[in-house]
Amino acid sequence: MSFLRAICKTLPTLAGLDALKFDELGTTGNVFAETIPAGPDLAVGVFSDGGGGQPLTNPTNLPAFRVQVRGNAGDVFGAADIAQAIIDGLNCLDHTTLDVDGDDETVLIGCTATQSTPVPLGRDANERPEFVTYFDARVHHPTANRPATTGV
Image 1 (cartoon, helix red, strand yellow):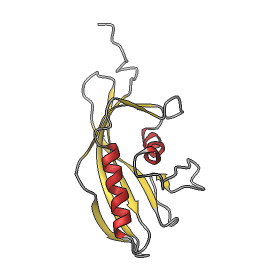
Image 2 (cartoon, rainbow, N blue to C red):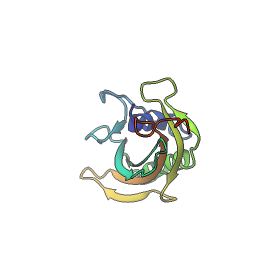
Image 3 (cartoon, helix red, strand yellow):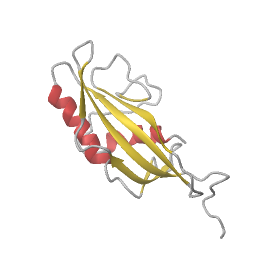
């Protein structure tokens, strides 16, 4: 199970993001996990940012992640609109299951954008505009030391 892959699979299903496609092999599509390759121009990378520690025995993890959007050269507003649609689609996406019945099925307890609008990063070497968005999440993740039910 991969929380990041579940996010990558979810992005193309969100409102306003039908231009996105995730291909786990990275040979087609424009949504990627832990990278943004040189092409295609319009690309989205989902990156782990660690997250918070979980000192309690609750069966939850607190991952943080960022989504970086690179647009077509000269199309600042298109890239910004995609980044904003990602914020709008993931912020408060609470109490839901991502990738239902898939290899990356994840119970998302809560997802919060840490800002209201995308942060501009400027342009890359090919004059393509880039924006980033940041999120904190809470996911159900039982382990041997944090079982789903404690029986107490």
